[in-house]
Every structure is written in C-alpha cells, then in structure tokens.
Image (cartoon, rainbow, N blue to C red):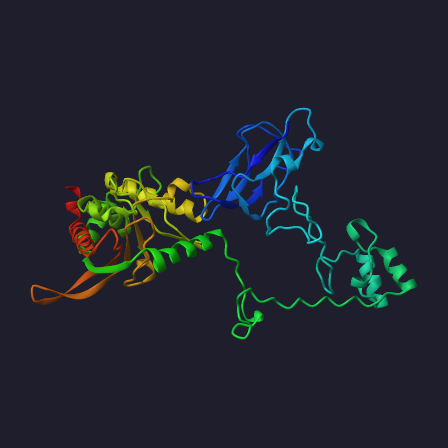
Amino acid sequence: MPIPVLMPALSPTMEEGTLAKWLKSEGDEVNSGDIIAEIETDKATMEVEAIDEGKLGKILIAEGTEGVKVNAPIAVILEDGESASDIDEGSLGAPASAPASAAAAPAEDTAPTASAPAPAAAPVPSAGDARLKASPLAKRLAKQEGLPLEAIKGSGPHGRIVKRDVEKAMKEGVSAPAAAPSAPAPMPVAGVDPRLYPADSYTPIKNDGMRKTIAKRLHQSFNSEVPHFPLSIDLELDSLLAARVRINAAAPPKGEEGHYKLSVNDFVVKACAQALKAVPAANATYTDDAILQHHHADIGVAVAIDGGLITPIVWKAETKGLQTISAEVKDLAGRARNKKLKPEEYQGGTFAISNLGMFGIKSFASIVNQPHGAILSVGTGEERVVVRGGEMVIRNMMTVTLTCDHRVVDGAVGAEFLAKLKTFIEDPATMLL
C-alpha cells in the first residue's frame, strides 16, 4: 500500500518547519537512504532521508511551504505495481490544504500538491529590449517603414520576428504597444500605523523562523522569566598576547598539515572553561525542582549569521587544548553561516560567550541564553593608560561583562568566576595547572 513520508522532527523541541526544497520529483525512483528533501528549522537546514523504497508517487506539500507540523504527511511513496490512483489522502491524515507557502500557487488553485513550481510568464519585451528577437532583414524593413518591432508578433522560431511578419504588419497595420502596467501600490504591514510609516517608505523583510525564535526566547528570558544582573571587570592582555604570538610562531606554515592560528577568543573560551570548573556553582542551570550543576563546561560561542544569531557549542571545553578549540570554533562558525549545523551542535550547553570586540565595541551586556546560568560579553582589546605601582603606564586592556541569572548565579558566585577568569587571562600559564 502507499507509504506516507512524514515531516520529521529534527530536534526534541521542533514543532514545525519549512519544507525548503524537494530533491526528488513525482515519478522518481527512491531508494532507502536517498536524500529526498531539505527542511529548514529555526536555525539550520537539514536533509531528509527516505527510509522506504519505491517511486515518489505524490508530493503533498509544495517546496517553500512554511509551518509544516511535525509528523504531517508531506509525500507518498508507491511500491511496485501501485499507481497514483491508489493514494487515498484522507487515510493518510493529510491536511485539507497546505499551510501558506512562499511558493504558493494562485488563490484559485487550492490543491495542496505540487511537483514543481510553475514556469514564470515570459517577459513582455519593451522598446529597445535586448531580448527582442528579429532577423536583420526584418529589423531593416521595419525601420524603413517606421514600424515598432515591439508591436509586431513574431512567427519564427521562439517568437523571432521575420520578414513575413513585418510585411503582414505593413498590410494590416499595427497598434501602439500597450503601456506597461503600473506597479501596484505597496501594502502596509499588519500592525504598522501608516500615519507613522507610510507603506512606500520602507521595505518589509519577512521574519523567518530563526528571527521569530530569537525574539520569542529572548523576550521570554529578559521580560518574564530570568532576573538578570551584570558584572564587569577589566582584564590585562599583555601576557596573553605575548603567549599568542609565541604559540602561533611555532605553528606549521599555512597550507601544511597541522597549521593553526589562535585568536584571543580561543584563549577566552579555554579560560572560561577552566574558570567554570574552578567555580562549579557558576556552571549551572535553574529548574523549579533543583539547580543542575553541570559536570562539564559546554561553551556556546555566539556566531552572527544572515537573519540572526546562533550559538554552536564546544563540548567539554575544559578537556581540550587551544589548538583543538580553535579548529572546532572555526569549523562550527563556518557551518553555522551556511546553516549546516546539526541540532545537537547548537542546542544545550552550560555557558555562552558573545564577542563583539572585532567591531570595536568596548563593553556591553548580553541577555542570558536559557537554559544557561550566565553569558560572558567580550569587548575590544585596546591600549589604555592604567596605574601600576603608583605610575601611569600603557597596557592592553579588555572589558568583559558577565550577565547572570540571579536565580542560580548570585553576585558572589559571579564575582568569584570573574576573579578566576582574570587569573587565567592575565597569566595564561595558570591554565595548565
């Protein structure tokens, strides 16, 4: 009997997703393990594998459709000897109509199936349009007779205008080409007061799943659930920068196996991991029944991507060296920007780091990314005049701010964590102890 293909749950918290693309068409043979579609969650694009063999008999949800519920039928696979007439959509539990889709058919077409998007209508050539096809003889003859080519219908291959078309126009006459229809007036976005922002004064950029999820979670975190407070401290970087120069100088040349180039952020990740192990009360998550004190420092590193922010995780960072951390962060950040991370690579973790120093930001306070108990905001490293031994000297300094969930990381715990972090950053050799 026909086998339904269901919308997969790509993570434990996923409730719906966007069917981004079909990689198989109706009628294609499907083998177990074949990639048949791509699904977009709030922060990643994942591939869907077929678990049965047969022929893709019918696509129930068109590509581009948003809000497809987990376990909803999206297609049907036919076994040997079966045909499309054997498909009973009612028995599959298919929705009466597909959710609104970015690639939806015209309003009068309510069928929930589509094997491919309809071809775009051919553009109407305008005067001087380089795509207007006509033979040289037809062009010359039309010019001599003062006939606009765009008003002549071509009968040659692919609509090409030939001599006989011009001669016919000379005999029957031509009408002036119709004026191009004016663009429809822009529609205001729902909820926007047109008196404040007229519809033609902005370009609306639709909120995708990622942006909606970020807005929902951070609003939840900041406004209702998590009592935040920030703690800031200045860190001296001179010893760290000197160690970084020495370590990078010892790396194999670029292009050779084993090459690496450590960043200041790699040292920060390692130092945070060590500080969390030294102050386990800061490496915790609040729940109504208990505070979860984590065994490992699983550190999320915030990465800006198109449309939002994602925090891939360096798991068990306290067990890894700087070279390993550097390689992992570069790999995770690259795949994050291409939306190729797996859910288990960015969901969970125990702590997070957000670094805006490369943009020249001196200091800032991030919002706690639940279920973490705290997040460290890292500002730019810069030369500052400081007092050492009663004298003014120039040192490379960096301001960091720890935003804490007061339910689990109180002021004393946060201060103890920052004191340990300061030790590890200002004397990197202590991270080896």
